[in-house]
Image 1 (cartoon, rainbow, N blue to C red):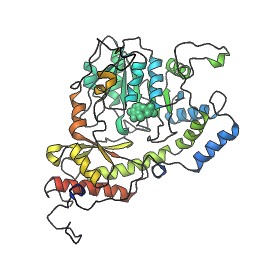
Image 2 (image 1 turned 60 degrees about the vertical axis):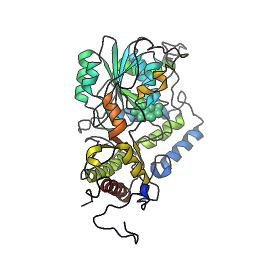
Image 3 (image 1 turned 30 degrees about the vertical axis):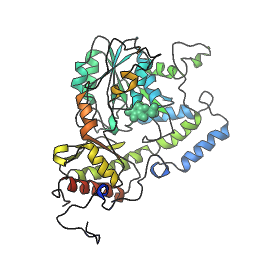
Image 4 (image 1 turned 30 degrees about the horizontal axis):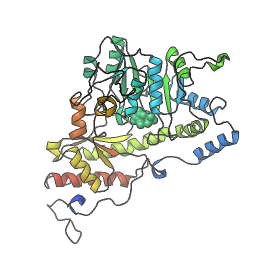
Length: 426
Ligand SMILES: Cc1ncc(COP(=O)(O)O)c(C=O)c1O
């Protein structure tokens, strides 16, 4: 840009972080507020309907049961049980699998800690496998190499809405008689094979979150689904203190929890569910538009394979070819007003005090003290994604064509600057 505001041909525009003109000055729609949430009259009516009924709890009301039936129908499964969060959903799944203390459960290092908490809560041991260098999703070969006689389950995360390679994971689980838990907190309606079969229905249990930032939200909340009768019944019991209410007897069949969703949340969830297909379609449309733009920039590519549903928009950076690391790209893009973060997490999950310092049960390090050590170096591919190559653009169904174009333009601008003027937009 010249001082009169005109582009100087042949010269890259000065980046905003270096004193140039900021490309985008108005905020993008965000999942943190109404601009970026698909919430309207239907949800308002739902809340009032429940308040007027006087039935706010699921034991007496009908909304939660109906929400579960509607969710099960959408996913084509016989069992759906609502919960209080994504973390609770995974706890319910692990509780249904019923590991013995010291049993091992394989987990990814690049996910929300809610994927791992339930393993420790059931006194099982999280074993971190490495991930695919493009998608950040568990690598089947790494998972295979970590299976021992104590392995009971794999928790697979469909990260950012992107599908894991399910054929391979289903084969591993069958071969080794392991339960396969799919963490779909970020992956509503994700289609691993693009054939109408959704992530969450390939393994033994699918777990969902309705936390504020997810495709659809009830503030907090979750759902677990399965087609397995034993797991399905155990999960229904687990959320309600393992109290078999339908028998009329007040007793507790095993150690469960109270993870019952409220009627207010379920009523909102039902309204949200009717909008899910449209939300996913809009996220995909914008996502595919940005992906095709980024393909043309040296050293930059979308890390979303087909079948994904764009919870976020992950970008894979080749630092040498693009002229900067993920942190350098993130700083420059943020300077242009684009909502991005480098690496998704600041560190892999095994490098957090819970695990490195044994901050679990009274500081004892139980259940893994003396059994397993958590330290940097465990998963080098995940560490490279976090430290150098992964960039995450916040994504939203309410992005307009103009919003997506601004994001693309910012990538072009930063790319041109990092490449010394050789990366001008054609
Ligand atoms: C992949 C993944 N798993 C688990 C969770 C935990 O969900 P919640 O925050 O609803 O407990 C989240 C989200 O926050 C998540 O993104």
